[in-house]
Image 1 (cartoon, rainbow, N blue to C red):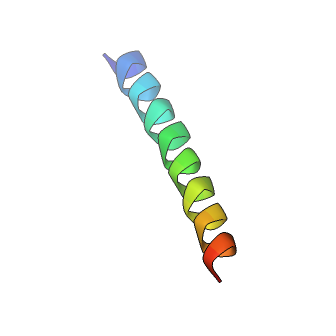
Image 2 (cartoon, rainbow, N blue to C red):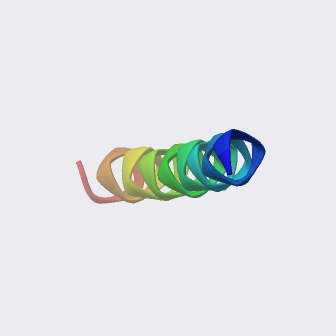
Length: 31
């Protein structure tokens, strides 16, 4: 059970990082 949670959190972190990168790129392009 704990392993599943860890994997889930890791995926969440990766997704968050991707979104953050995309937002940063958008901000740089538009400002």
